[in-house]
Length: 376
Image (cartoon, rainbow, N blue to C red; front, side, top):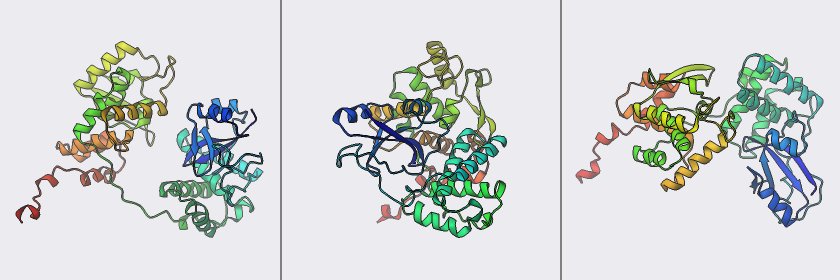
């Protein structure tokens, strides 16, 4: 079976687009690949961009992704899954130039030298790549503020990309042009998208209990319970090690969390008991929660799958994410009378304004308000 693969950025994720001569057998083979998804907008199959698939499809480890896949020249039949060509746009026809490759590489090196996390290095370098590739026809030193506005209108808005993605682009290019590049672009004049004051999604205590009680598997149950009981981010749970649990002081130590900050969070007696049961059953070695192979880190995708299974078992139809458990923890603490300053410390928020958003979703005071409708 003849394949062609191309690294892409699709819906803000690093993916590998797959092109192949259509046949029913080939389509079924692609469908069975782990993490494979069909894109209705691009009309192609794509898989996660990871080391395993890069080796399988013979892609260089350092090959940079495109914001959208480049057009493929292979002849394929129309109206069959995996066969339609991606939508042709000005962006898909752009090509990487030696200058762009060198600039993005230098940017990555600078970010790493400043000890940015690998997640930030990946996000910023891919965002910068999207922007520079759009202007592959002109030298980087000639890019101006008007070019940023044009990119927002003709690429981000034209493809209906999110404001958060636009904000990532702004973060990346401002840092790049301010610290790396001497150019005509004035970073102080680069504007951000208008902030959308979105309220956090919060579950009721009854809904949380249903989710946490859904699994019989002790590992799955403990992972979700620890996220809620300590207000953890997904990465904080996955990066946790057995020695980070201090059962004598009823504390968990969260190492190098967001912003390269350590913090501590209280552990309830109930979660400590659950952790002890889990530890005796699974005996983790390197990571507190390990994958199928001993010593391997539990994957983000597997953790998301654990939550999805719990939602199905609990018959909860809301589009709950792992971060909803963190939001719910903070809101429930606030409703129980915990001071905002303590909640801020537990969650690891840099600014108190970030924590104050939970006052807008707390129902404690709202429930005491009597509607005039009741007096009619």
